[in-house]
Image (cartoon, rainbow, N blue to C red; front, side, top):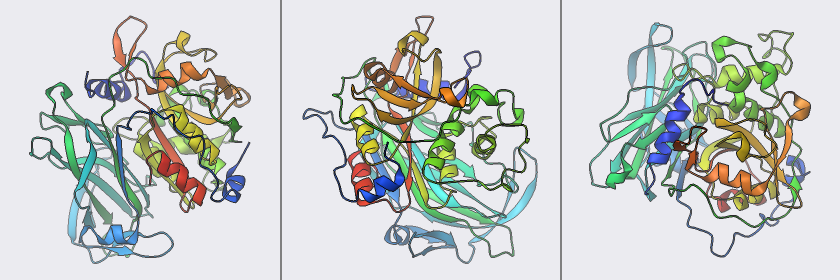
Length: 457
């Protein structure tokens, strides 16, 4: 949850979103379901989804880009690795002051024409970075007037923190678009300017003279142009179902690890991530958790906070970094996207896929929450017979209070709107349906159908 007394990167980002608009089935049971129905059908008059998702994940995808010092690898999970390095370059870590030389190779995607001329784009990736390696993701786009953006850094990332400090890069703008931590955004959408296409560039790094390499399995981006709205149409309830997902409170960690943003309300994203990672069977060893103070409950939440922490943003709420963290667990992948209705979430739940959603609201706008927030992540795990939302809400006093039931209409609106009024009566922004999904590296037929139904490959 965002602290109300401080302007945060996410507050700034959601403001950009608002500006950027025009005016109890678990994984095993889901796997056994095979090719069954993906969930309730969307309403006949459902609006067009204002989102474009593209991901490079197959061997043919990786061979289709432009490689310099990298190569595609086949197998059960195709990917990209360093081959003969293209060169060596120095990198000075801005958070440690350390300068070191790194061998590197690059891969540049083909141009992807956006099906939705977009006001913002969020990249995400899934990779393995053993000790002595790291990666950088960049984006270069073409505007609707035919001119180009510069190459923007969307993240410098490693699973660990022994070689570099994972980081976003501030201060990137060409006067018409900017990068807000993890999100490319058009500065003034009222001009009609949009992004019409983009390329992504990966740079893989390793210590000179070694054979270590990052392996990237998934790279993609979500472009969107969400309509300006204070309210959204109500969806009709679908099938009632609840997934059994571990329950963790962020609040019991208040004051823990100031170097990773001090626990408590700052840890909604990693706490939600850890719940879903463990739902899919991801676990941490005693050795991995040995660094955590043994007096702390749920040490795996502390671990998630440390290894999602963005040292530039100075917090754990970088969306792609959370997705990348989830994909460090065996046989998991993840993506940042936007969904269009609770029908989309019902489709996913019916296939055994929980979701993490971002929402902001006043205390009185969400009955039973007991708090208000400028931005908060929670985990949707199911729906009641009446269609109300069952959520594991980490903003709870203890693990036993995490499971909540929220009224369908209230919850859908606070999640999907792009504009709202704050406690002072000022118009501020909402997330417009932002969501991140973690799911198996080899999804079942039913899971693939559900993911495709919400626009995810």
